[in-house]
Figure 1 (cartoon, helix red, strand yellow):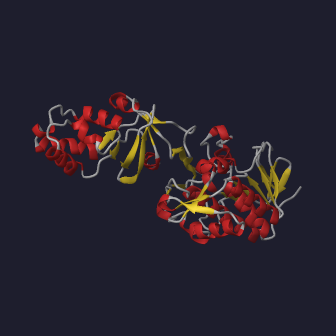
Figure 2 (cartoon, rainbow, N blue to C red; figure 1 turned 180 degrees about the vertical axis):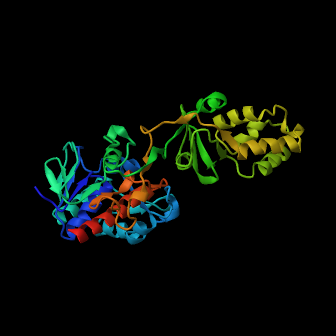
Figure 3 (tube, rainbow, N blue to C red; figure 1 turned 60 degrees about the vertical axis):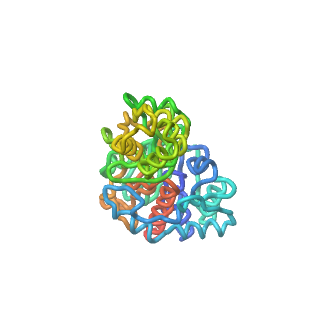
Amino acid sequence: MRYDAIVLGAGGAGLLAAATAGQAGARVLVLDHADKAGKKILISGGGRCNFTNTGTEPECFLSDNPHFAKSALSRYTQWDFLALVERHGIDWHEKTLGQLFCDGSARQIVAMLLDECARGGVDVRLSTQLGAVIHADGQFRVAGASAPQLVIATGGPSIPKMGATGVAYDIARQFGLGLVAPRPALVPFTLGGDDMPFREISGVSCPATARVRGRSFQEAALFTHKGLSGPAILQVSSYWSPGDTVSLNVLPDAAGKLRAARKRMPRAHMKAALTEHLPVRLADVLSTRIGVTTELGNVSDADLDRAADILTDLTFRPSGTEGYAKAEVTAGGIDTAALSSKTMEARTVPGLYAIGEAVDVTGWLGGYNFQWAWSSGAAAGQAIAMRR
């Protein structure tokens, strides 16, 4: 059968692109090997889907070309997607830092996208093996179907248990599109060596400011049986490279707090002072690392300052990350230099598009990656309709 466009991938980006093109008059086919559409949507946000963020700005995204995302994000904004959610009667709420979630279930977002596709007459075929992608005589042929336009919306290899693969990169290479080395992002760190004591307090979390390479995020940090996790850690992981150190400020104004503790309870020890502000198990490990064993009343200002330096700049050298199995997204991917920022079309292969996580654009934690899926999908969908 012949279509105006074939979309590979029934995730957020692919479904939004298909619905946009279909409702503008294009005949669109969506193909996916999974048995359900939007599998990553269904598990996101604890099953409630953090579908966008009110604070979405281009600065909230990583890419070798930091300007690439600006066009798509400005033409289909977080407010456009929120309006769609509200048109479908989906109740939502805002959590911290502008994160928007469904009151009910992530299934509502998938149902909404499928309904939008149905309104555009889109043909969605699941449980379909893609096989080879053939391009000849101006037509792309996949799984027995053909079209003059093809959209790569198969995502990246993060969360392979959901069926994620690197097929987007295989197709990109086939058509001569460059790649920025993919890597796990929004992913927990593993620790070893001198940092092993922190693995022994698995399950402990605290508010912290995490820093790496000049980037900092203030949210919760979580100590795990493998290393470090929690929102603050996941955020800085996207900027981390092997060999980099990661630092945590777990006690703002530590110097002032320790001096106040010394004055208030001079016969207490460091652990007691830390326990006033931090979980007991974390205070125990930190007091050992600080190494001050005398009563607070006998601790000099210089030693208190050294302790404060540790608490406000607690440094780790991760041995690695937990990889794609635990990564929420994939950083890197299809090089944006190969694509039009306005249409997401490949510059050297007319009719070929790449959108969503497959592309070298990665958002912060908190709904930003979904917004990139919606914005890039809308850009491609509009372009497809114009070219049909």
